Image 1 (cartoon, one colour):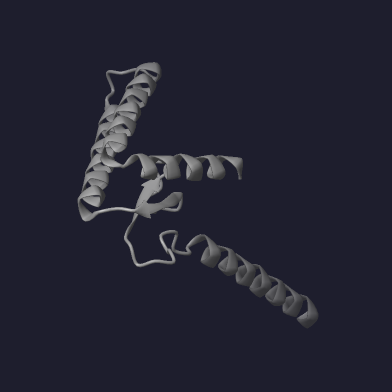
Image 2 (cartoon, rainbow, N blue to C red; image 1 turned 120 degrees about the vertical axis):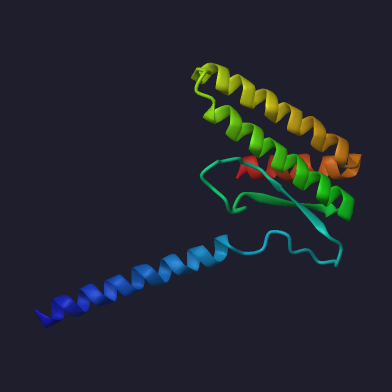
Length: 132
């Protein structure tokens, strides 16, 4: 009986030990770069249930003004999405189309914020992310 309990405890600790290693890798800072220039963080997937930025991509150096604009655009999109999802007068198809329209508006506004070089890098990073 003691051996069985001992094996169970060892198995429990090994499982929790491995899961902590995976979490540490997932929580590594995605904005770390080799230079000291600021980097923007863009959400690549939007999920209302997730409040952390686990799906993000680091982009070329940007200005503080660009950071503020991106933050405001993301804030506006999240508010619009929440408002659409909570609207009981819309059916699922209408909600989906309005969220898609809001997403297109967000993309248009984002394109106005970044330089062509930054947009190119964003596209490349997005393409790499989709291939993985």
